[in-house]
Length: 251
Image 1 (tube, helix red, strand yellow):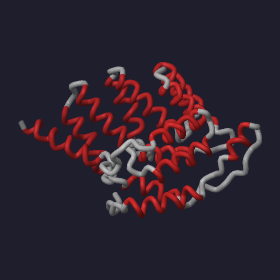
Image 2 (cartoon, rainbow, N blue to C red):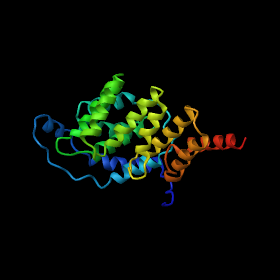
Image 3 (cartoon, rainbow, N blue to C red):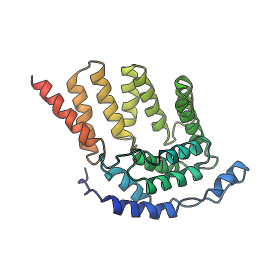
Image 4 (cartoon, one colour):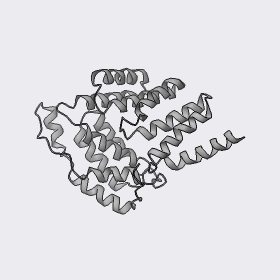
């Protein structure tokens, strides 16, 4: 395991983020796609590493307000409508202008999601956007059906882990603990290399505890998160959960 990198200060991270935003694809590419014209393929900006650095090192306690959430919602609507370049630009603008917003990490994650999943036709990304549109509309069954269809149609796409995680979340919301854990562990597997893995490990631990399962098993999920992703924003609250579980196991 590589040593934990020191956290960067928020001003430095935002400067790096601005550099990446400047290199983002132009919204005009959305128009070309809508008209059936293939836009010029641009290389993934080498500065994407700064986005990942920001996402991984931004303190979980740094965001503290909801100012600018309207712009975040606008970016989400663009994403659900398949206007991915415009969506990425809007998410980046939101993160730069409202760096204290509680949703800033989610915005950065969505930019990376878009950048990493572009391909001719954007079919997997469009289907994932369709999945989120159903979920955000409160149509959980339709969202789950589209997620399963996405996994079946694109079994090798990176987005398969996002669909699996969404299915885990939906199962949790409906009290299907065992299903939630099963889907989460697919995402959490070390071979997935998914940024959702730490969130999946926490979900698996939380669901194990919620169903009255073995506390030692929940502890193993939490410890795996801390060992594999020590810089994750989830690490501080999970450390507190680990301490509580250890106290219970010693009683």
